[in-house]
Structures are given as C-alpha cells and as structure tokens.
Length: 260
Ligand SMILES: Nc1ncnc2c1ncn2[C@@H]1O[C@H](COP(=O)(O)OP(=O)(O)OP(=O)(O)O)[C@@H](O)[C@H]1O
Image (cartoon, helix red, strand yellow):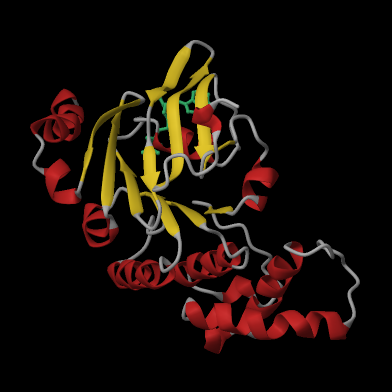
C-alpha cells in the first residue's frame, strides 16, 4: 500500500488537496492548489473576484471534477467522487442561493432533510409515526439556528436572513464533520451578519468549517486560518492578522481597484 494513501496519515488534516487544478476550455480557474484544512478549524477562503474560490469550493464538494491533482478527506482519496458520496462521507455544504419549498413549514423542511439521511430517503408517503421520530430532532436543529418560534410557518414567509439560517439547519441535519459555507452572509444586513457569525461560532463545535467569505469583519471574527487566492493560486495563508498585513494581499485587493 502506498503509505501516502493511508487513512489518518496526516492526523490533523481533514481536507488536503495537492496540485488541484480546474480548467474551463483552456482557462485555468484553479491552478495547482495545495490546501490543508485542519480538523476543528474555521478556515476561510478569500480573494478578489474571480480568484477561484467558488470553483475550489465546487471541487471540494464534488460538484466539479478536477482537471488535475488530488483531494483527500481525512486521508481518503476522494478525487472525482460524486457530490452524494462526498456528502455521505460527512461533508455538507450550504448554497449561496436559497433553494427552499415556499409552502413547506420549517419543521417539515428539517424533517425531510433528516429523513433523507436514512434509508427511507425522500419518500412522499410516510406514516405519522415515522415522521414523529424526526420531529424532536428537527425541533432541536431549528432551536440551534434560532428559528424555534417559526417552526410552523411556511418557508416562503421568512425574511432573507432567516432563510439562510434555515439552510444551515438543513446542512446540519446531515450532522456533517465538515461544513462548507458559501458566502453565508452575502446580501445580509448588519444585524443578520452578526447573528450568522454567532451562529457559526455555535455550530463549529465538533466540526470543521470551510467558508468562502467576502466580508472581512466576518473572516476576522470567525476564521482560525485564512487562505488568500489570486488568479487560481494560493497567494498566502495564515491567521487573519498575518494575511491582512501582507503587502501582497493588500496589492491583490487594491490592484483590482487601481486597474479600474
Ligand atoms: N463554468 C465555467 N466556465 C468558464 N469559466 C468559469 C466557469 N466557472 C468559473 N469560471 C471562471 O473562473 C474564474 C474563477 O471563478 P470563481 O467563480 O471560482 O471565482 P471567485 O473567486 O469565486 O469569484 P467571486 O468572488 O466573484 O465569486 C473566473 O474568471 C470565472 O469567470
């Protein structure tokens, strides 16, 4: 057996990519990225527009197949695995665009998500007795994201920030070891941003969180480690304080503006 393939080889690394690349018709959006996400960290991916953050995120979750390189999850090679398999291995993601059923209540949403994790799958016809088994856990999850009081309202009536919180509850229903958040505060007002930061602080217990985030005060408040991408490559990496003072990072962000 190739020792580099042994599970748990690098005990602290949950996600490890080597030479990870993705090209779209000759344009390289992610270019030889060696990323290590350590267990228990909140790890932020930042960088100017078009740096390759979303593409990297989609590679990590199997929504895109790499053109080259490898991805390991806790030492297991998952390069080219389907999103379903990666989810089964304990990686859940939230989406930037809310994708909810307007008429279903919050409780129903979470119950269905919980059911989807069992062999019952997403059956349309399930007895009340079976559903009741999920009800308690659904209530707990809604409580965790601060939506306990709205459990019986249709999702369509929620404010934007609350919809994002519901999406988090749906991702948490999978009880993921790794949670990937794609711009969790995008489009939110200041109050919702603060609430989301507090929420992520709560739900990070016992899990690893990777987030793509443009709001630097959110990154400052949450991230143990920050990877800065530019032109599909890692420009630098470190704590928030380390990267924010790095002249290359300042140049990368200002470069876009001065060029405009
Ligand atoms: N499906 C695709 N086909 C062609 N080019 C793509 C595709 N997806 C992304 N790209 C290009 O790859 C580059 C990186 O895009 P990506 O969305 O990963 O960047 P980003 O860092 O997430 O940017 P933003 O902060 O604006 O969301 C961009 O130049 C983009 O136009």
